[in-house]
Length: 282
Image (cartoon, rainbow, N blue to C red; front, side, top):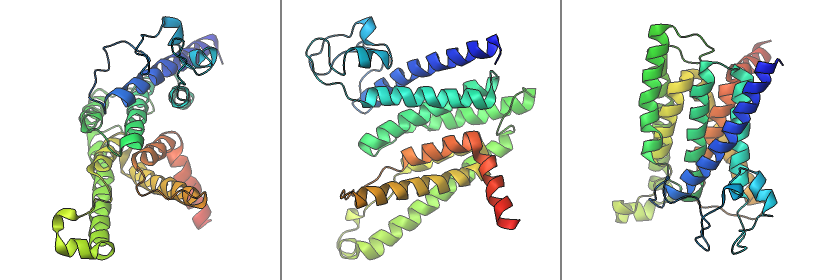
């Protein structure tokens, strides 16, 4: 790697760590309907504001020994975990696309997916404003890339491919949602369904549909289908592992697994497709 490569690599790592800290704020405050700007970062146990040296991603957690400086309340390991995951995701995107325009777009997409996943993990809910504006911007961006012929390793480079990706990604998840809701309420929840249709159970929320619209807009229809497959696979494996360990989860958030599948497709999607079909036919 040249000096410029190292510079952009270190810059990506630092931006990734800072973005991870921002993601923590969003995941914590958005569901509580709090501002993500004010007040400044503070301890939720004693309410005291954090010093600047206590707000350094990853490093402060280690220096403080996972405790608040003021009240010694424990700091959740989720904070450094999300900071690390965000940094790692940004770094992976840089190593894939290099110092180019696509890295800015795909890092923003990764950050959005991390925030949506964190909220969905905690609350089984994905705020629509995390997906719908991004979907619109994804279409606008694909149109600009196509019209001005901007250079770069774009996964989706025309507005038609972006629209098709959103239609396939969101449409497939919506059809799965309809089928799952019908089956569960018609057969598994039959007595309640017959007595009162207001007691119908939603097996999948519309937030997952919105999320796949966003993902499909950026990675196209073929990788959107692969994302759904990978997300279903990871979610099923998680459910099996937790059940094997003695935990019976009633509801499992789907958003984090769709986000993980989308990230893998972003980096190695076509390699996975080529590997699968080359092994299948040869």
